[in-house]
Length: 101
Image (cartoon, rainbow, N blue to C red; front, side):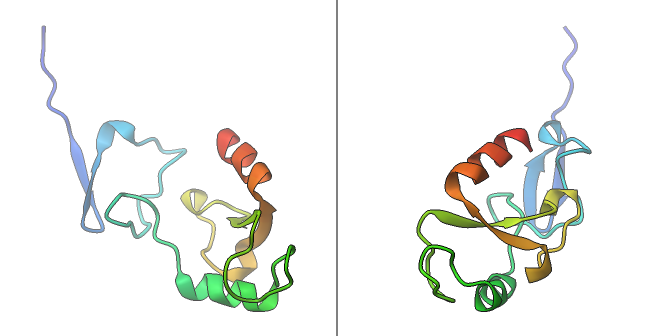
């Protein structure tokens, strides 16, 4: 039996196992959190909420029960983390979309 060393990539200060990467589902240039997730801009989220009030409450800040902010073009596919690439999405629709992506 031949042993193959497990490779790791260092991305934005975090170690991510190379075997979990694929060109269709991983953004190599994205800034990452300590857990390896793509880092989201809090400023972009705040700016999105200011111009797009919560569909459930009409508020422009704070939580929006039953909704999440979704990127129209996913970050992992090169979508911008900007208000122009964001939309409100129901939690149920978000789960369905995540299952496909």
